[in-house]
Image (cartoon, rainbow, N blue to C red):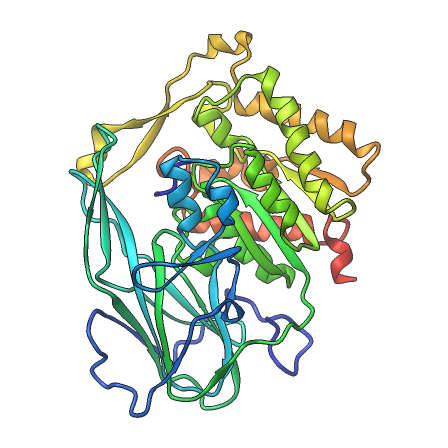
Length: 427
């Protein structure tokens, strides 16, 4: 869908990103903090301080994390993909320190839509020893102004901003700063009032996930509360999130990125983008899924691999794509989508979510005869008809923050819980 647009030291129980401690404060600013660090220590932002990125690029203002490697990016000129993979969903700055003040300079690129009210700023989540401890946003930066009627866009430039977290506990601790899932973010500088060091590898299993904008995080409350982040926290695993808004399209270069990325567990959520882009017909879908899974298996022949079909989305259950914007509420700041296909076109091979679920279930059953580590999960077990009645999709495509939490909790129970395909990692 189009993106709108660790363990606590000394314990055996993983801390949960859902826990909240309200002591520290966070201040976004585009100027030096009003109470600057007396003797700031600047630390270069290098790969060993980042989790969740597959590549780093030296950009105009600083370091730009990418969630697809350079070779993959070079094989597709789609602007939607370029935006989605550069939005750092699941990417976090991580380090160990006894600092009580942390400042991060960043230069963002934020989307805005012509004729609609400004969209909320992206959120930075601060986790201390695995617990959500503070939140803030960075102001300034570029604005990508999009005209939804014509598809044209222009960049309105702006300055570097600073997010400041103060009042952190004066002890050695593990710090994570989760970057906004919906803003392209160049990391400019990291300053603290005590030295920092990279976090050691504590042996947590690595979970690699790929999906659409729902996996990317669209309409979640914050970066550590997208459904994959919540599920990873509950499962006690280290997440790399390749949820790519509008771009879960069975692209071979994405399959190769999954193949080449270290992982102990892999999940791929397939379907909704193929419908709402009207990308292919049923004849192409099956071979494309086989090819995608074959490529992943080249690098991960026996890794537990979970194929997840789409969650319930009533507008596309039996009506093909493409998805189209409903402009009637845009001036009120409400983005809503509608299905623009014709149900009668199903006989010609057009895809719907019902067709995709049936085909995915069949393909996984077929392949599992020779691949016992391949599993299937019906997405409606994560969010189905009862959930839609209680927590409807606000724009007809994307779940809200409460639904993200429900999906994350259900995925954790079904995938990491007893009898689940990823349960063995907790044995």
